[in-house]
Image (tube, rainbow, N blue to C red; front, top):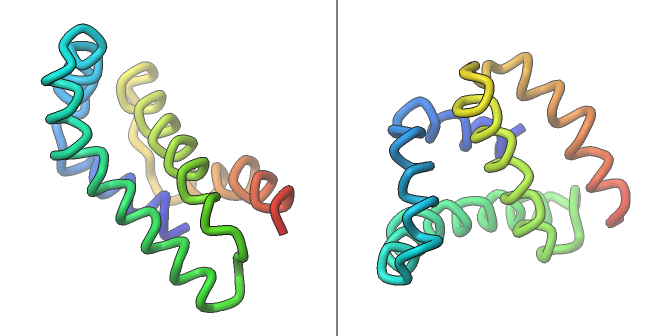
Length: 110
């Protein structure tokens, strides 16, 4: 749940439609893409890696490479809910996402 809580907190604080506009601009302008990666995406990925490392430290996970997969899944879910569906990402929905998606991914990587 820590990953989804982190993503939800970022979505609550950020201008998600503005972020999506930057993602679109990054596809056409390499400088925008680099700035977006360095300024927003890389720090979010580091936060995700930190969450995964803590889970590894607790013996809950073994594969640090999962952080990129989990980051992409969680970010995609947040963007899909907030931008495409115009919905929030409340705790009960986050829990359902963890149970129905993330735990199945994690089960494939013991």
